[in-house]
Image 1: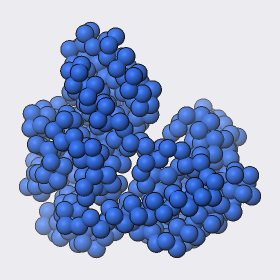
Image 2 (image 1 turned 180 degrees about the horizontal axis):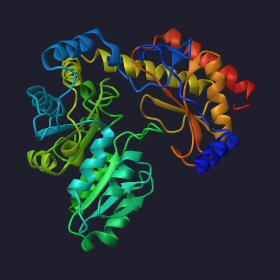
Image 3 (image 1 turned 90 degrees about the vertical axis):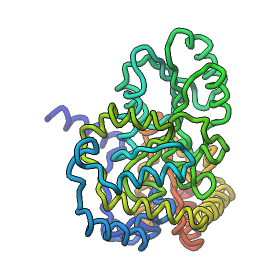
Length: 389
């Protein structure tokens, strides 16, 4: 393994080597990390559902009834009634015809893209789409093209040049882009797709539970129900549990149950997780208090950072990057903040392009204004000392 040792040493020399932090409790606003209490600005637990008492109780009750595991893939004997209920609950919440749940959001993109395209088709993807989309596209036999981020003229140019060469064309975009926090130009994408008779595919991992009425997502945010062919999302971020889902037509659900490889070759979701997710959606149906608090905190935090002179890019969501640029300095900044009581992860290549290093701040509904005030004070003082601003 000497070749791996040399690669690891190279990471250390570049100043981007990281050791995994160890969280000793639930993922909340304050966490105990490596033996020290710190303000957590790195969690995808947007609504605080990951440790909510109602959701924990639902999981415990389901474990008592069903056990800890499904025991098989869904297509054999692992498809419990609770899985069917979960599919129906999500479809109803998203105002879509049907849904099927996968073991993770990554598994959705790895399984769905290759299942719905073949060598006669073309996939067109935004250049900043999530890594799971990139890997999912690589698993497909379809031809592929990439357009510059949110460049609608670039997207249409590809369709003008290539549409008549392929049977089906699938346009894929993130709903919310996870490193910059901006929202896809979904109305324009849908309009272009209709013009050229293309299919649309939205990965709404960071939109579900965040955008739209009660967190129904990017499609709801733009009022595009019934106009997006495949809506993918995760159940591990705002929903706070684990898994992923695909919403769309009943035909797409039926097809994926026959050709979605992660469903066919990996054990079904744990029943306790399914029950927890059902409870989470019930809570979103009952009240907007969680999404309202999330957005109130996000706007408060963003305004403070802007007032202090930080470059937070073009974020339109609670995802708030602080742009640094230099990768080594980004990691140093993240480590310095941790030493002072704020955990915010440094994001560098290959997660983002080289020279585009940033710390990515993730505000949740669990944060108090004092948490956010204390965090911004520490971020500002540390940035000044390091000559970042």
